[in-house]
Amino acid sequence: MAKRKYSRREFVKKNTLAGLGAAVSMGMAPGILANCASDSTVPAILGGRPVRTEGWPSWPIWNPETDEELVLKSLRSGVWSRADIVTEFEEKWAETVGAKRCLATVNGTNALIASLVQLDIGGGDEVIVPPYTFIATVQAVLMAGAMPVFVDTDPETFQIDVHKIEAKITPRTKAILPVHILGLPADMIKIMEIAKKHNLVVVEDACQAWLAEINNKKMGTFGDAGCFSFQNSKNLAIGEGGAIVSDNDEFMDRCFSYHNYGNPYGAIVGEVGAGTVILGTKLRTTEYRAAIGLHQLARLEEETTKRNENAAYLKSKIRDIPGILPYKLYKNVNRAAFHLFPFRYKQELFQGLSRGDFFKALSAEGIPATGGYRPLNKMPYLSYALMTKNFQKMYPPEMLDYRRYMEQNQCPVNDRLCDEAVWIFHSILLGEKSDMDDIANAIEKIHKNAGRIKNSV
Ligand SMILES: *Cc1c(COP(=O)(O)O)cnc(C)c1O
Image (cartoon, rainbow, N blue to C red; front, side, top):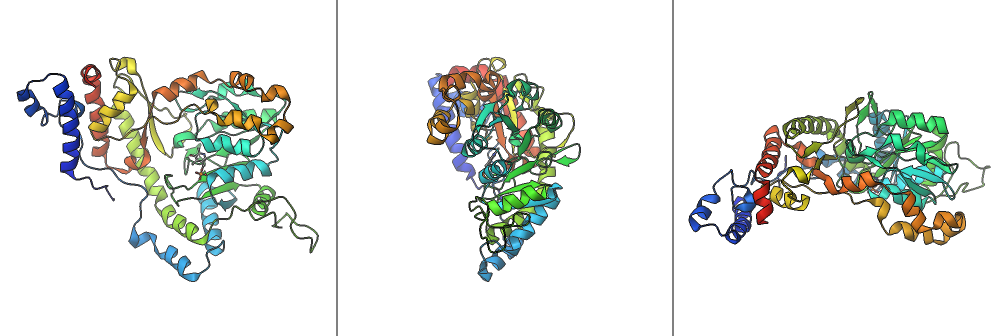
């Protein structure tokens, strides 16, 4: 496994100097300072020895021995636009997730837009979305011309709170767009029940949920369509790429046609010689991307197993630290994808040490972590969307009133979650058990010394 090469000396120097600065500002005697740097019980941010000075597995993984053959073959062939390798990737991905059909696209965002448009979702419609997601989920709804309606988050699972969906359904509601965010499955059983009861379409944003499963069924195969992303940071990385999966032949033929300028495909036929038949755009991927994808896909199963094992182990190591609340999975989840390993950080149980300072202390110990999403239901793009010419023509004035929209789309639980969340990136879960121990030990150390750290940073 490739590890990012930090020079050990550089790392120690950087952290020790920062720590020394802090120690000096606390007025420590020079004798204590000299001992500090080698003391592993002293937080690194206060000049102690970091839990870890080694790097972490980097992402994406490129192994010249196993990952190049098909890529070079496709490049050398001169056949770069969509052909046999793309078809092979589609067949392989459909088989992998257990769907009848797959269409590869340029990216996950456009897989979502294509799915919504081909399921007849557009101007005047409302689509239920979670606020705790990547921006592309909501932009896809807006780009299809539909109005996003936000349903608050279940803070324990980080997923859409299924108990709050029905209250948001109106006569305009056409679809639910659940997201398996962070690679943890949303409660699809309940969501499909609600959708059935209210006759709603379901498009799953599985852009972080490769191989995740509920009741032995893969995410992306519960709804009318499932969308995936293969962007560089994703667990199946191609650089840019996406896919739509479904069992519905007519829908998949429509998606194919749409992704190829609206030209006839399968069931989407015109009279002979009639030419282009539906509205379309251009979303085709390339041969060399599909080739990269096939090589990366060969590792996905094994990597997913490893992420699940390490996540479960790390969770077991940190869940008893007061103030650390790791993710929960719904009972019927067999497996998650763990695009991220999330927990909630309770500042009040860390003697008031802010989340920002917790990150600094963690980073000084050699553990990278981030805070994740900001509330998507409060960002300026929404007021922009309501003022666009298309929205002005498609919706009645009361639906375009930004204040009213903001009022109706408040998600207070999610606001809090965004302030408390801590994420650890998936490539870190490809390390060994001892690497997970380092993370747990660093958090434990910070917890023990939280008061001291708070008073000195
Ligand atoms: C990455 C991602 C997308 C968009 O995928 P792209 O390939 O980047 O366009 C959509 N939704 C979620 C939840 C994602 O993580």
